[in-house]
Image (tube, rainbow, N blue to C red; front, side):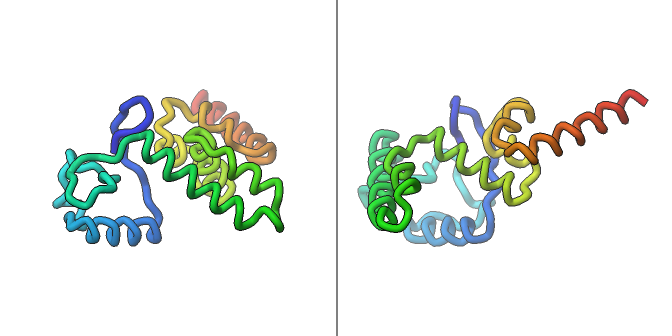
Length: 149
């Protein structure tokens, strides 16, 4: 996949996302098996059924913005602060949310670093919460000490 900075990347997907991707590819009459994928085929195709081109970034942004607005409206009565966040989505916010939740659920820092295509684990570590930061520093200190021995 080509992402931020036009860098090629491999992104790890959980089983539910793989199932959704397989369904989506089948709907587009594209091969489901990774060995049959063609790199030049866009993952997110044009919204026009007979078009082989990709959806524009402006159109995708609009689709996502509308999705988040609908989600915000459906929860605003019960969760006003969260609804307010959903009204202001951005690609950076979605990356931040992915990183924060993945790390909070125990994903390895290197896995999240690779998904975000950061050059350094220290860049990714900004998404750790205070307890996680302390733990990561302690492990980093232990690792640095062990390497000096």
